[in-house]
Amino acid sequence: MGLTGLEIYKLLPKKNCRECGPPTCLAFAMALAAGKASLDACPYVSDEARAALESASAPPIKLVTIGTGERKLDIGDETVLFRHDKTFFHETGLGFELGDAEGPQVLAEKARDIWSLDFERVGQHLRVNLIGVRSDTGEASAFGEAVKAVARAAPGLPLVLMAEDPGVMKAGLEVAGAARPLIYAATGDNWEAMAGLAREAGCPVAVRGRGLDELADLAMKVAGAGCKDLVLDSGSRRLSRTLADLTQIRRLAIKKKFRPFGYPTIAFVTSEDPQLQVAEAGVYVAKYASIVMMRSFERWQVLPLVTLRQNIYTDPQKPIQVEPKLYSIGGEAGPDAPLYVTSNFSLTFFTVQGDIEASKVPSHLLVIDTEGTSVLTAWAAGKFTAEKIADALATSGAADRVRHRKVVLPGYVAAMSGKLEEKSGWEVLVGPRESSGIPSFVKTRWGA
Image 1 (cartoon, helix red, strand yellow):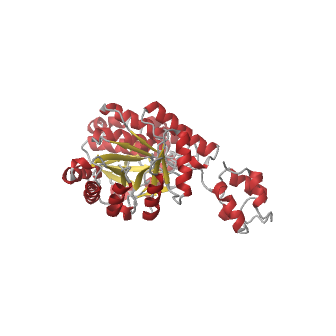
Image 2 (image 1 turned 90 degrees about the vertical axis):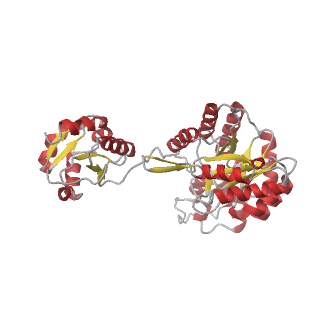
Image 3 (image 1 turned 45 degrees about the horizontal axis):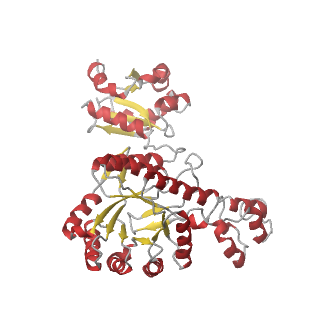
């Protein structure tokens, strides 16, 4: 349980120096208790007080890193239950299990397929994060060879080593320990040996209980054995029970600051039906798994999950934006090509881009800085105005790229066309309300 503000205050130097930011030590203590300040901000706190205050100043859910290099996975470090309260910081890692009984050649082929899963959506590359190598044979040599084959076929992709026999796990760590895989799992039967392996290799370790009570007890034991980077698994494999456990862990960690649950979580998809696998994984992505492990990795299954994840882990207060500038769409647009104008909200931009490409007419697209809002929203908020568009026409180099001095305005904001002509000196054509009408517009009205 975390300390209260008054309990923290008793351990502070009580100088009221304001060097930490708040006007008094009491205000700083309250901020620490709420998780809104860092103990490092106080320059006068003693070593004894710092040790006592570590749990109060630590984030409610610890940040844990799996893997190394560019594709390492950071999970945890979340501070809220609902993203509209603040935001979610580290998106759920999507991983896929492979069994060592399939042999190194088959495993390498499957690992390459997983490694290559990459989708582009609204200007972002959406990727999967982990490959789990599972010991089905129970043989250390087979497990070591399987880990080696997967690591070579999917370079840089973090691994989850899945074996409950410490001897088998050791064989996997001898191959991939330097790449900081997740050790899965420490249980009530093997936790001392697994904690020793994790401590020796410097790797994070998953703790699996049989229910939340045993999980809390095991987490304290493994942490007490010197393993600080834990991932929690309640042991449930039923959707309703797993969802309840994930929610309870998150609530206790954030609302009650219950330290045994202050770590990221992992959930396993167990449905046999391919479509239900996607639905089950989607539930865990939404609430509140830090890692979701699946056994199927068809592209049609992965795409909706990475799309859902992107939507959930996009800061609702900071819409995805594209750079406001003049773009050439559908090829190299010449001086007689149409010039369209739109906002820099990414979904708007990529929709308009696709419809321009569908028209088969290379065109210029002038993107206005609307702080990531759509055309109508920006117009209502005074962010998509005749003055801003006129200024963009003057500063973007549009006059040097086209010679017809015509600009196509979205049909929904046709009311500003007269003012835009007055402010810019350009001829304004009112385009279709929806960008899907661009192919028809360019054939019937452009140049008419």
